[in-house]
Length: 112
Length: 112
Image (cartoon, rainbow over all chains, first blue to last red; front, side, top):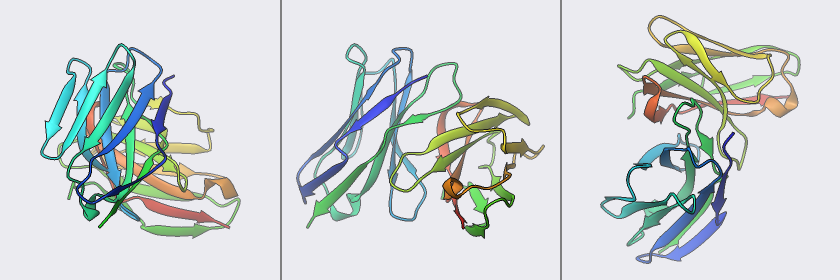
Protein backbone atom coordinates (compact mmCIF):
# COMPACT_ATOMS: atom_id res chain seq x y z
CA UNK A 1 0.00 0.00 0.00
CA UNK A 2 0.84 3.66 0.08
CA UNK A 3 2.91 5.31 2.83
CA UNK A 4 2.61 9.05 3.48
CA UNK A 5 5.09 10.95 5.62
CA UNK A 6 4.44 14.49 6.82
CA UNK A 7 6.79 17.14 8.18
CA UNK A 8 7.08 19.01 10.42
CA UNK A 9 4.94 17.64 13.20
CA UNK A 10 4.67 21.08 14.79
CA UNK A 11 5.09 24.52 13.28
CA UNK A 12 4.90 27.96 14.87
CA UNK A 13 4.85 31.13 12.78
CA UNK A 14 4.24 34.79 13.43
CA UNK A 15 1.01 36.22 12.15
CA UNK A 16 1.48 37.41 8.59
CA UNK A 17 4.32 35.00 7.83
CA UNK A 18 4.07 32.02 5.52
CA UNK A 19 3.80 28.39 6.55
CA UNK A 20 4.86 25.37 4.53
CA UNK A 21 4.02 21.75 5.28
CA UNK A 22 5.54 18.93 3.26
CA UNK A 23 4.44 15.39 2.54
CA UNK A 24 6.07 12.54 0.69
CA UNK A 25 4.39 9.46 -0.69
CA UNK A 26 5.77 6.10 -1.69
CA UNK A 27 3.59 4.86 -4.55
CA UNK A 28 4.09 6.75 -7.82
CA UNK A 29 0.64 5.61 -8.97
CA UNK A 30 -1.12 7.83 -6.40
CA UNK A 31 -3.14 10.42 -8.29
CA UNK A 32 -5.10 12.49 -5.79
CA UNK A 33 -3.74 14.50 -2.88
CA UNK A 34 -6.12 16.35 -0.54
CA UNK A 35 -5.28 18.51 2.46
CA UNK A 36 -7.48 18.65 5.52
CA UNK A 37 -7.61 21.14 8.39
CA UNK A 38 -8.78 19.87 11.74
CA UNK A 39 -9.50 22.26 14.57
CA UNK A 40 -9.61 20.90 18.09
CA UNK A 41 -12.67 18.74 18.62
CA UNK A 42 -13.94 19.25 15.08
CA UNK A 43 -14.13 17.24 11.89
CA UNK A 44 -11.35 17.28 9.28
CA UNK A 45 -12.25 19.90 6.70
CA UNK A 46 -11.11 19.65 3.09
CA UNK A 47 -9.26 22.87 2.32
CA UNK A 48 -7.58 22.16 -0.99
CA UNK A 49 -6.71 19.22 -3.20
CA UNK A 50 -4.63 18.48 -6.27
CA UNK A 51 -4.72 15.81 -8.92
CA UNK A 52 -1.66 14.23 -10.43
CA UNK A 53 -2.09 15.94 -13.81
CA UNK A 54 -1.60 19.35 -12.22
CA UNK A 55 1.57 20.80 -10.68
CA UNK A 56 0.10 23.61 -8.61
CA UNK A 57 -3.24 24.84 -7.39
CA UNK A 58 -4.12 28.04 -5.53
CA UNK A 59 -7.11 29.20 -3.56
CA UNK A 60 -6.75 32.64 -1.99
CA UNK A 61 -4.02 32.32 0.67
CA UNK A 62 -3.61 28.58 0.24
CA UNK A 63 -1.66 26.75 -2.44
CA UNK A 64 -0.57 23.17 -3.01
CA UNK A 65 2.32 22.06 -5.18
CA UNK A 66 3.00 18.57 -6.45
CA UNK A 67 6.30 17.13 -7.64
CA UNK A 68 5.53 13.73 -9.13
CA UNK A 69 9.15 12.95 -9.91
CA UNK A 70 10.22 13.42 -6.31
CA UNK A 71 6.90 12.09 -5.00
CA UNK A 72 6.22 14.96 -2.69
CA UNK A 73 3.58 17.63 -2.30
CA UNK A 74 3.40 20.71 -0.12
CA UNK A 75 0.84 23.02 1.42
CA UNK A 76 1.66 26.72 1.42
CA UNK A 77 -0.28 29.20 3.54
CA UNK A 78 0.56 32.86 3.05
CA UNK A 79 -0.29 35.82 5.28
CA UNK A 80 -1.13 33.49 8.14
CA UNK A 81 -3.81 34.47 10.62
CA UNK A 82 -4.54 33.17 14.13
CA UNK A 83 -7.58 31.31 12.80
CA UNK A 84 -5.23 29.23 10.64
CA UNK A 85 -4.06 27.54 13.86
CA UNK A 86 -5.09 23.88 13.62
CA UNK A 87 -3.77 20.43 12.75
CA UNK A 88 -3.26 19.90 9.03
CA UNK A 89 -3.29 16.47 7.41
CA UNK A 90 -2.15 15.50 3.96
CA UNK A 91 -3.40 12.39 2.22
CA UNK A 92 -2.86 10.38 -0.94
CA UNK A 93 -5.03 7.99 -2.88
CA UNK A 94 -4.25 5.39 -5.53
CA UNK A 95 -6.31 5.51 -8.74
CA UNK A 96 -8.10 2.20 -8.24
CA UNK A 97 -8.02 2.42 -4.50
CA UNK A 98 -10.74 3.29 -2.13
CA UNK A 99 -8.78 4.42 0.86
CA UNK A 100 -7.01 7.64 1.63
CA UNK A 101 -3.61 7.27 3.26
CA UNK A 102 -3.10 10.07 5.74
CA UNK A 103 0.02 11.68 7.08
CA UNK A 104 0.51 12.01 10.83
CA UNK A 105 -0.47 15.67 10.92
CA UNK A 106 1.16 19.05 11.50
CA UNK A 107 0.07 21.20 14.39
CA UNK A 108 0.27 24.80 13.18
CA UNK A 109 0.26 27.66 15.65
CA UNK A 110 0.01 31.22 14.38
CA UNK A 111 1.27 33.65 17.00
CA UNK A 112 -0.54 37.01 16.99
CA UNK B 1 -21.73 22.45 6.85
CA UNK B 2 -20.87 19.50 4.66
CA UNK B 3 -24.05 17.59 5.41
CA UNK B 4 -22.45 14.43 6.80
CA UNK B 5 -23.85 13.58 10.20
CA UNK B 6 -22.89 10.97 12.78
CA UNK B 7 -24.44 9.61 15.93
CA UNK B 8 -23.91 9.39 18.77
CA UNK B 9 -21.43 12.17 19.53
CA UNK B 10 -19.87 10.41 22.47
CA UNK B 11 -20.06 6.87 23.77
CA UNK B 12 -18.59 5.03 26.73
CA UNK B 13 -18.43 1.24 26.64
CA UNK B 14 -16.88 -1.51 28.67
CA UNK B 15 -14.28 -3.91 27.32
CA UNK B 16 -15.94 -6.90 25.64
CA UNK B 17 -19.12 -5.04 24.74
CA UNK B 18 -20.39 -4.29 21.27
CA UNK B 19 -21.08 -0.88 19.72
CA UNK B 20 -22.89 0.48 16.66
CA UNK B 21 -22.04 3.86 15.20
CA UNK B 22 -24.13 5.58 12.54
CA UNK B 23 -23.44 7.88 9.64
CA UNK B 24 -25.67 9.74 7.22
CA UNK B 25 -23.93 10.68 4.01
CA UNK B 26 -24.15 14.03 2.31
CA UNK B 27 -27.07 14.39 -0.05
CA UNK B 28 -26.25 12.84 -3.43
CA UNK B 29 -23.29 10.83 -2.13
CA UNK B 30 -23.37 7.05 -2.52
CA UNK B 31 -20.03 6.15 -0.93
CA UNK B 32 -19.19 6.07 2.77
CA UNK B 33 -15.77 5.43 4.24
CA UNK B 34 -15.02 4.84 7.91
CA UNK B 35 -11.85 5.90 9.68
CA UNK B 36 -10.42 5.48 13.15
CA UNK B 37 -8.46 8.44 14.49
CA UNK B 38 -6.42 7.84 17.62
CA UNK B 39 -5.35 10.85 19.62
CA UNK B 40 -2.59 12.76 17.89
CA UNK B 41 -2.70 10.58 14.78
CA UNK B 42 -4.06 10.81 11.27
CA UNK B 43 -7.24 8.95 10.33
CA UNK B 44 -6.75 5.24 9.59
CA UNK B 45 -8.98 3.65 6.95
CA UNK B 46 -11.29 0.92 8.25
CA UNK B 47 -13.45 0.17 5.20
CA UNK B 48 -15.56 1.72 2.50
CA UNK B 49 -19.09 1.04 1.32
CA UNK B 50 -20.24 1.80 -2.19
CA UNK B 51 -23.83 1.16 -3.24
CA UNK B 52 -24.40 -1.12 -0.24
CA UNK B 53 -21.33 -3.31 -0.87
CA UNK B 54 -18.03 -3.31 0.98
CA UNK B 55 -15.51 -1.82 -1.40
CA UNK B 56 -12.18 -2.24 0.33
CA UNK B 57 -10.90 -2.73 3.82
CA UNK B 58 -7.93 -1.48 5.77
CA UNK B 59 -5.87 -3.38 8.31
CA UNK B 60 -8.63 -3.92 10.86
CA UNK B 61 -9.80 -7.28 12.29
CA UNK B 62 -13.15 -8.88 11.36
CA UNK B 63 -14.74 -7.70 14.60
CA UNK B 64 -15.03 -4.36 12.78
CA UNK B 65 -17.95 -4.73 10.40
CA UNK B 66 -20.34 -2.45 8.60
CA UNK B 67 -23.44 -1.96 6.57
CA UNK B 68 -24.74 0.50 4.05
CA UNK B 69 -28.45 1.00 3.55
CA UNK B 70 -30.41 1.84 0.37
CA UNK B 71 -30.44 5.52 1.37
CA UNK B 72 -26.61 5.27 1.57
CA UNK B 73 -26.45 5.83 5.29
CA UNK B 74 -24.05 3.47 7.02
CA UNK B 75 -23.28 1.70 10.27
CA UNK B 76 -20.01 0.65 11.83
CA UNK B 77 -20.20 -2.23 14.28
CA UNK B 78 -17.41 -3.21 16.59
CA UNK B 79 -17.64 -6.43 18.60
CA UNK B 80 -15.61 -7.53 21.61
CA UNK B 81 -14.39 -4.02 22.34
CA UNK B 82 -10.80 -3.59 23.46
CA UNK B 83 -9.22 -0.68 25.28
CA UNK B 84 -7.26 0.22 22.13
CA UNK B 85 -10.52 0.77 20.29
CA UNK B 86 -10.87 4.06 22.16
CA UNK B 87 -10.67 6.70 19.43
CA UNK B 88 -12.58 9.16 17.31
CA UNK B 89 -14.49 7.35 14.58
CA UNK B 90 -15.05 9.37 11.47
CA UNK B 91 -17.14 8.66 8.46
CA UNK B 92 -16.66 10.42 5.15
CA UNK B 93 -18.92 10.48 2.14
CA UNK B 94 -18.20 10.98 -1.54
CA UNK B 95 -19.79 10.46 -4.91
CA UNK B 96 -18.94 7.29 -6.82
CA UNK B 97 -15.74 6.71 -4.81
CA UNK B 98 -14.17 9.52 -6.74
CA UNK B 99 -11.94 12.16 -5.26
CA UNK B 100 -13.41 14.61 -2.78
CA UNK B 101 -14.66 13.13 0.43
CA UNK B 102 -16.23 15.05 3.25
CA UNK B 103 -16.06 14.08 6.89
CA UNK B 104 -18.71 13.94 9.54
CA UNK B 105 -18.14 15.32 13.04
CA UNK B 106 -17.14 11.94 14.42
CA UNK B 107 -18.10 9.73 17.34
CA UNK B 108 -15.78 9.72 20.32
CA UNK B 109 -15.67 6.16 21.68
CA UNK B 110 -14.15 5.46 25.07
CA UNK B 111 -13.63 1.86 26.15
CA UNK B 112 -13.03 1.28 29.85
